[in-house]
Amino acid sequence: MKRTLSLLVVIVVLLPKLSFSQLYIEPFAGYQKNLNSPKNNLLNTGVQLAFKLKNYEFLFQIQKSWPQSINGVDSSYTTNTSLPISAPAYKTINTSAFTFAIGNRFKIAGRKTKNSYFIKFYTGIMSQNNAVKYDYDKANYIILNPDKTINVTGIFVSGGFEYMRQIKNNRLFVELNFSSPPSGNIKYPSSFNLMAPITLNVGYSIKISKK
Image (cartoon, rainbow, N blue to C red; front, side, top):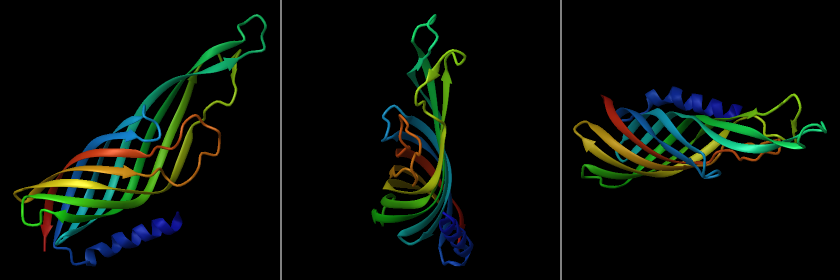
């Protein structure tokens, strides 16, 4: 983890010294579906810098996946003979994530037109939070092997495809990305897995400099 952070810092420091011809800032927003849990869908927002050199672009991205609640029911139990042996324990899981990544954008079609197609690859750090809350009679009942709040930070990789439309000096893009979960394991037995999102984003690329 420390080596990855050091590498990202070095890359950011060296970027201004590289001979990129154009620089863009690219806000975007989209929708995520968790491949490890079909019920877990999130909205995401982010921004990235794109350093362009002919048919290649270097990307520096920050993205936030906003919390989304999943509701469920577990069973709780009691040894009090005057109460029912079991009772429902209502559960809410709030999933969110934050990613910091560097990426590569390669143009594969549309080099001389306003419509272009790219493949993209990212690697970076993902911090993922799964906050668990229960609603039940805690004074009289207990849950056997309850889910717990889990925070995991680790390295992730992603890749995908992008369509881009040139609009004067700026660009409109739509992208589809597939991401791994962060490296690491859930150390406690859990009813859910770490999120591995497939993401559909729409963004606008604004030129801010030209050498």
